[in-house]
Image 1 (tube, rainbow, N blue to C red):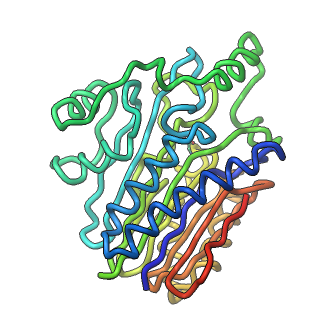
Image 2: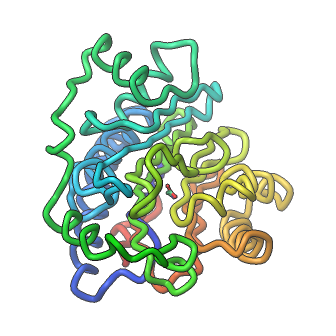
Length: 302
Ligand code: GLY
């Protein structure tokens, strides 16, 4: 059964931003669904879905991402093919509009899994991925948000998540194609006001992203430091493998583990090998959308 699920972050999405989150997820879902319905691959669907979310300034991915402590955008992404377990990831990018496409190039055209910073951007220029001006990734909304906390020494990401005030718009997608192949991709600008060079869960295979045709796929969003501590995406996969493939139970249990063991906040989208969904989060809201071959209409919510 072809199937697709996407997310656009889990946090206290303000009322006046809910519609933009729903719309962004809906547009991206449609793009991926057309690819899957016309017989395209899960890898193509995930790349195009995540590119759409990166291009939408609503989200913390691509242009519009949060700024780090010195006012720069630094982007991370990963992609994984559940058929071969091949994967590609990039981190600490300043000049790439669509990190998911660079992550795919790393997966398809390199012998490595994770490239960072200058090396990743060098690899991009050698593989037909255009570099942009770093300022092209910065929006007025994020510049103002960043300016408002400068000089406030007591600002910490942990407190922001604890008080449900951390914006957490990491994006991701899980797709299953007609050949039974699963792919997962995740892309982010990371946490707001992060230390320069900080890397979260999104580009780490097993933390932000995991795909295994035999079990399913997972993409995460939320506070990366906590997600890393519990190896979030692979934890969901292991729970699902142990429970016979019940995606929703694995999703809920993983969020309970995240909170209890790492005081973490966030959400997961999950798909089992049969194309059935699981979604769980412990934030006030999560932007998500899904559709599979058994549904007449997509489900969209934020
Ligand atoms: N979950 C995204 C990050 O913490 O970077």
